[in-house]
Amino acid sequence: MTEFAAPLPILARYAVMVDVGYIYAAAGELLFASSSRRDFRVDAVPLIQVVTKHADEIIRGELLRVYWYDAARDRVPTIDQRVIAQMPWVKLRLGNLNARGQQKGVDAQIRADMEALARHRAITDAVLIAGDEDMVPAVEAAQAFGVRVHLWGIEPPYGTNQAERLVWESDTVDVLDASFLRPYFTKNPVPDQSRSDTGSFPAIGSPTVPSPSQLFGERHSRSQGGQGIPPTQPMSRTGAHAAMPPGGWSPSTTGPMPRLGPDRTRVEEAGEHVAQKWILTRGRDNIRDLLPGPILPPVIDKELLVDAEKELGLSLRPYQEAREWLRDAFWERVHREFGIGTGKSRG
Image 1 (cartoon, rainbow, N blue to C red):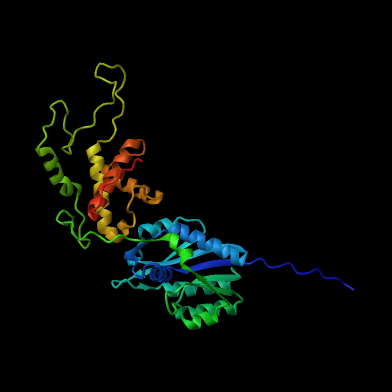
Image 2: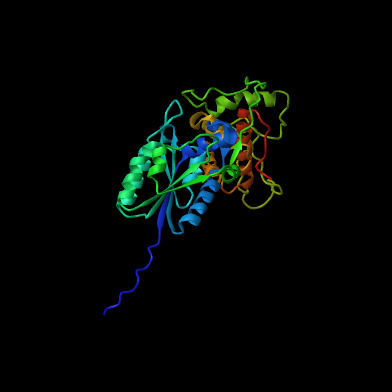
């Protein structure tokens, strides 16, 4: 009689699919009694990492990837979303955020991805962090192709924050409690309403971005009004002190003159102008996500450098000190916008 070997166990392969609007709002209600993102900050990178680790402990298989479903105005990613998009094994999916702050198109993206992964047998299991009943058809479609759906929710402060039918249709249900979420959520301080806003720049809705000369002409007139400029220091075309030759070099020194570094005032103007431009184009809420500083996420720091080099028409890559001037000026403008003290890029 022919003997057949026992079949090998099938290794689970799973995807983690996160409705960010749900997890942020539900966690905000649980921890701070507020579902508005303006009231708290989220450290999203370690949050994604701990969710992934928790999924691995439960499913014990191979992670395909994490799908992070969020929304942004006109689908232009925010600062935090740009950082998340750089993470390995994470796919950022963006719906549209309308004028009322409602996300549109996110549910449809989750349904389409879950059904496609199941149909092509790319996964055996799906971890779904969501609460909307609109997810039920996606769960049913995935299950029809043999995929197990594990629904995770956020501990509700009272009642329930997930549709009852969604809970019924899922294969397993898990709840992330306050102790699991608390390390990654921080309540924003209440803004000081007593501060004067007379020195602020135009509102975000301004149709044009002011030029550096428009922004900083008044600043130069104030700074130079009470201080005489030494006659031995020539003026640059921008009206600031010209960069001086490095120490130890004089006209009598033999050999070519060393390459001059960028002018500090021009670099600082570029840093403040980039900050102002980002406030106008990306929105105050997105720039507020960078506070309190002074360290910028690497991907954002690179964007600051690139934008400043475009303003200056020269490269700052060889000049470490100039890059520090740039960051300090950027933070000075951002801190002035939000009425807080100024930090420095150097520790």
